[in-house]
Image (tube, rainbow, N blue to C red; front, top):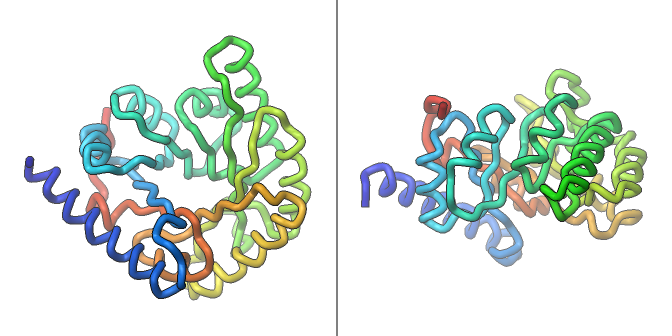
Length: 237
């Protein structure tokens, strides 16, 4: 085993134990929580090693980095776009992402739906695109996210599209705030969402520093980068 693969294996084992312990503490089964490895700025070779170690889901923040990386890695992985997304990148993202977790406006949803329609019409894609609404837990426009009061309207718009499948909510805990309180707000928002959209059951919340609090409050996906891969590396070419 290469030294990098051994390092990643050790980190993965530690993250898996944290997730398992948090699930036990919350009275949840381990398989209720998906691990998404956030590989932004790390090379495709690291993604390939994680796949060899059993990782099945990978998250990226930037389309221009993710597209080439997804094309380079031969392993069968599920790719998630988790960063803020401009509408003019919609078609490019649809080319590699299985799921977009950062939909925060009707205009972005419409752009993604249009891109999916184009890809399906040309025969490049068969399935609709899974999407999560990024919910704003601090109402800070600089950090992205849909205000909680506007979630129902955006959810309805996505659900009416034949090109998108609404899977649930994603959020980032506000900087400097108690993550447990933020994730409790997200859980309540998710409960409200599922009254009208019962299939939107996914909750993507929790990162390297706060995954335990997120799991306590019902997260079904944790997005882990630093704890898996270490400090930020160089972007792959």
